Length: 67
Image 1: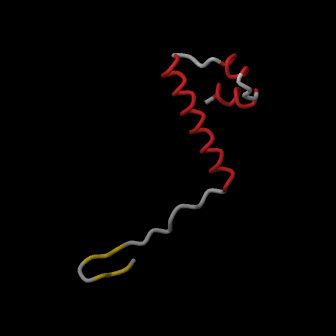
Image 2: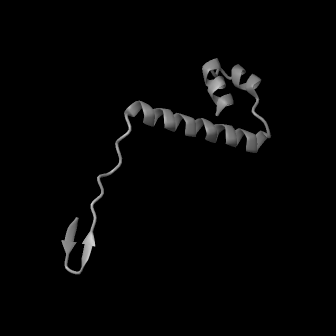
Image 3: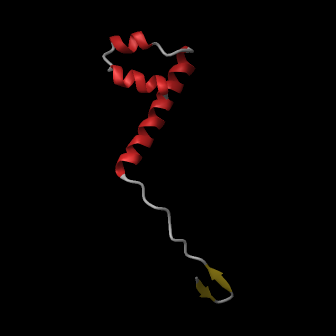
C-alpha cells in the first residue's frame, strides 16, 4: 500500500506468467476456433475432404474437428 495525500493506492502482485508452451497452445486453439467458425459461416459446414486435397495434415484436421 502506498499512501498518497488523501487516498490509498494498492499495488497488486500481478498474475503468474504462463509459460511459452501454454501461451502457444492457447493461441493455437483460438486460431482453430476462428478458422472453423469462418468456414461454418461461409459454407455452413467444414469440408474436410477439400482440406485434405489442399494438403492439410491429418493432425491439423483432427485439431480443427475438436476445436
